[in-house]
Amino acid sequence: MAEKFTRWQKFKRFLKRNMTVTWAKHFSYQVFAFLVSVAMVAGVASYAVTKSYDGRKLRFVDGFTITAHTGAFNTKDNTVESITTAVEKGVKIIEIDIRQRPDGTLVMGHDIIMTNSDGVELSSAFEIIKGKDISLNLDIKETRVLKALHDMIVEYGVMNQVFLTGIEQFQVKSVIENCPDVDYYINCVPSRIKIFSDDYQQEIIDMLEETGAVGINCNFANASRTLSDLLHKNGYLLSIWTLDTTRQIKRALIIKPDNITTRDPEKVQEVIDNWGK
Image (cartoon, rainbow, N blue to C red; front, top):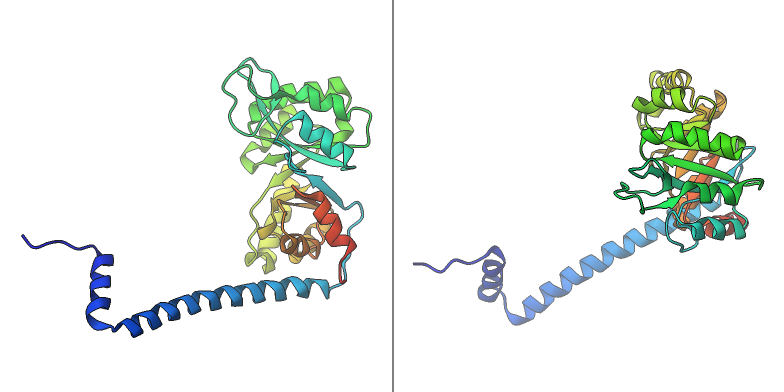
C-alpha cells in the first residue's frame, strides 16, 4: 500500500526536490519579510488614524459622563471592591450586572446564578451609593429581576441614582410593566451604512418613541457621528461601550456621545487631558 502524506509533508517534499538550499533559505526570508511588512503597514496605518483624531477639535455634549465598567481598575467584576474602588477614584457612574438567585435574591452577576450562595447581593451596592453623588448603570441580564429590582430601588430611595441598560426591544413591555418610572437605554446595533438613509434614521427615532427609552446603548464599533447628531437633534442620548484602548477612546470622543463605558476611566481622562498634544 502506498504511503499517505499530509499536505504539509507533500509541500516539504516539493521544496526539497525543486529548490536548492540557498533558494529555500531565500524563500523563508521572503515569507518572513512579507509578514514583517504587513505588520509594519498595519502599525503605521493605525498610528496615522489615531493621530488624525488629534487634529480635530474635541467637543462634549452637556452632561457628558464616563462610566466605570464593572471590574474597572483591575478589580474583580461585580464585587463590592469593584464599586468601592471606583468610588474612591471619583467615578460618578458605575456599571454592574443584575441577576437573581433561585430564592429570588437580587445579586450582582454576569453569568447565570445557579445557587443561593452565588453572586454578591445587590443591596450591598445600593448601601454604598445611597446619599452619594454616584449613579449605577444596572445592566439587566434577565428581565425576571425587574419587579423585585423596582421594589428595592424604591426601598433604598435611589430612584434618581439608577438607570437600566441591556434592554432589547422585545423586553420593553416587561420594563414598562415592572419599572415604569426608571430610565433605560435600549440596546441597538445601528448600521453605519444605513444610518445615512433618511428612512433608516426615521426608523430609529420611531423605535425610540415607541419604546420610551432615553436613548441608545451600543458597541462603539456601531456608533457614528451621524447617529449621535440624529439622536441629539431629537432629544435622545447615546451611550457607547466598552472602550479600553487609546485608539478606541479617541474614536469614541469625536463621535460626541453622552456617555462612554470603560474599564480604564483614568486612561480616558488622560486622553482628554492630552488631546492634540
